Length: 195
Image 1 (cartoon, rainbow, N blue to C red):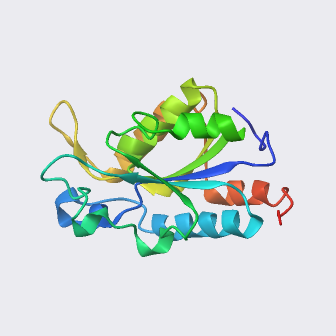
Image 2 (cartoon, one colour):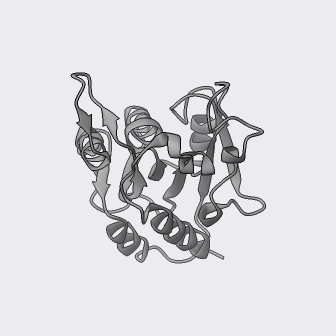
C-alpha cells in the first residue's frame, strides 16, 4: 500500500454521509467526530481544487432510513455537496455496483482514492475492498468513518468501536492503507493547489 500519494490528483470519495444514520434505530455508534473530520477533508479538497465525489445511498427498501423521499435521504449539513460537485447514487452497499463510478474514475485518470463516510463495516468496507480489487490506490481515513453496535454470528453484542476496528483490520494492507486524517492532510500539503 502507498505511503505517499502516488498521484497529484487523489480523489476524495465521501460515502453515504446522509441524515439517515442519525435515526435512533441504528443504535450506538463510534467516532462522534467523524462528521467534523469529513468536513475538514472536504474543505481541504475544495481548497486545493482536487476531485471529489459524494456517494448517496438511494435505498429501495421500504423501511430504510436512506429511502428517497424520507428526511434521512438528505446529506448531512457538514458534507453537503456544492453546486457542480459530482453526486453518484447507489442502491447496494458498494459504490461501484450499478453506478458509473468506475468508468468515471478511469475516464478521468483518477486512480487514487481517499475514502471516508459511513458505515465502516458496510458501504465503506465494501467500497474500499472493491476499489482495491479494481486496482485503485486507496487510503481510508479511519477517524472519518464510523459504524454501529452489532450482534456477531455467535450472538454476542460487539461495540461499535470493536466492529470498526475489525473492519479496518480486514482492509489494511490488502485493500487499502488505513490511517488517520492527519496523515492524509499532511500528505495533501505536498500537492500544490490548483487554479
